[in-house]
Length: 330
Ligand code: NAD
Ligand code: TDX
Image (cartoon, rainbow, N blue to C red; front, side, top):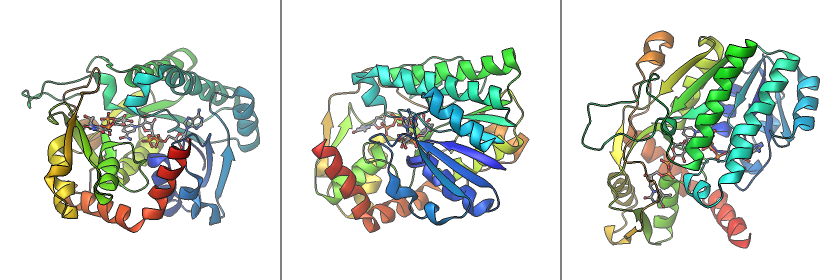
């Protein structure tokens, strides 16, 4: 198989590249990434040594670049991780979210139609469903739940999902969509909750918790997400959406307390700050479809995954200190 991975210099995409190179060493992986603030070429240095890996620097919304690449490579599968992914940034600058997340997805699918492809897989998010009430723990998002996006980020991801389904229905393009909850693990940019809190706690900096810290997220270790995408893009039914969750709901304050305990740092570092505008209360995912149809299961318990993640950030201070330095300079 020749597989295009867009956004592979980011958090989940890079973990996915390493997962694929290990699980299917004879498949070829081509990564297309624009290396935005969130992309990090260093993360892919070990992949660059692999005989079946190629890196291409470019934007998914750049039709000429995408067309040229598809013409050269004749991909079997394209999996689209490339996105602007941070909700807070979408509140201050929605336009790049529309360009990358919606237009970029459309440009990729046009190339898939033109050159032919066995499967286009769109990596989406549970955020497209909006929020659930904190006190209704009996409610979960199923694939049939209506789209109810809250932020410009989730609106752009929901729009892209609609385009993917429309390309399937209108042009018969073979597509699948996975909608996953909050991921955590190695190589996550230190603007997202878990790496932000780990790196700030290591530096004895205040930990900014939005509102009362009672918002709930469903956390999944990144490798489990990669395993789900691998199965869905190869064996999932065309035209289908698959929810992917860890069945592991935690309030933000509980997550932060676990980090502080593991690092032996005081709770006085927690600082309550103004809430995020439009902040979704709770996400919870029903993953029965991918579990029964494709026999996927999350393998990593939250406590183990969090310890591994904390250890990774402690051992890779160079990686995140360089990012903090570069972003500070910018
Ligand atoms: P990330 O921000 O860490 O990485 C995004 C990558 O995409 C970066 O390498 C960046 O350089 C690249 N990119 C951005 N714009 C591009 C463009 N125009 N052309 C080419 N490359 C571009 O994101 P992530 O957390 O790894 O998320 C990956 C995907 O998974 C996204 O589509 C996101 O919506 C989805 N997702 C993320 C989570 C999560 O918890 N992080 C959960 C569910 C779904
Ligand atoms: O400084 C912070 N303080 C805080 O309280 C940050 C950055 C976050 N939070 C809260 C907001 C959320 O309730 O923590 C929770 C998690 O926040 P993020 O890490 O920004 O993730 P979230 O907004 O839930 O979205 C994530 O999961 C779904 C990813 O960023 C998305 O790309 C993915 O689609």
